Amino acid sequence: MSEDKRGLTMLGTSEMSIPSSPEQATLEKFENIRAGRGYLIRLSCPEFSSLCPVTGQPDSACILIRYIPNKFCVETKSLKYYMASYRNTKMFNEEVVNTILDDLVSLLDPKEIYISGEFGARGGIQLTCEAAYPEIESL
Image (cartoon, rainbow, N blue to C red):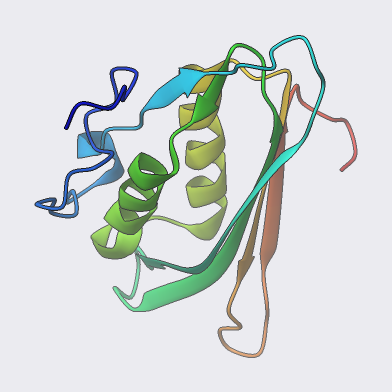
């Protein structure tokens, strides 16, 4: 492929397998060509799943990522595989949201980022967890 892929290794590759955990996933970034402009990127992952660390039962969620990029933007194919890597990962819902936030802050150093996880009801209770960087006193 002769196109400029800007150092991205996953884009344009069809022979990919889902990583077995978020630690094994590769998140990729590319240069923000509008770094001088403040604009919002919104990504929605409506089919997210992970496992309850106590019961091993699946938890489903809609994960929303909203960020104002600084020098870099996340490459969405790598994000798709990263998010899919949670499907066999045992983790509390709150930890899921905060881990995604930590990983994206580490990768992108965004001006601002907000992660929301709206998890399916379990036992008649629906949980939504929100986390932001820089930290906001009251979301």
